[in-house]
Image (tube, rainbow, N blue to C red; front, top):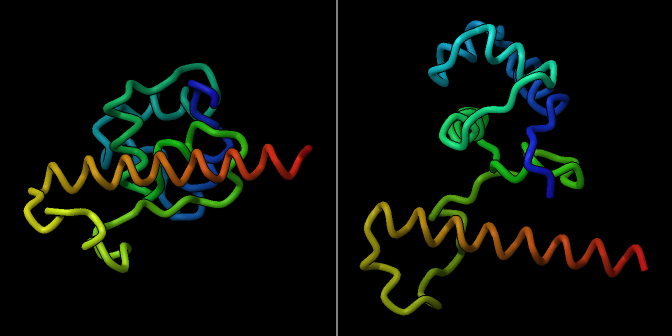
Length: 122
């Protein structure tokens, strides 16, 4: 996994949403020149800004960082899980607990996909 934002993906997401750099900057709490520099590959966002950008576009931070993810990976929501009863006590999780559980499940799914891709290349 890369630790730099794929500038081409960011630009494609922004252009696909038909918003200007100025509008994106406003929505995610950054300056227009800084977003432009990210898209040009000169700067990298902080982790909090990266998360705000991913949240704005409804993708994961992994999608913005990883070269091998070719389609926007939709962020999981609690409703996406068919049956969370497999997790004992899942109904008692708070908003923050649910977010942590979803992040971990997303991580596991990404790891599985990465392992699958490695096996297919062999």
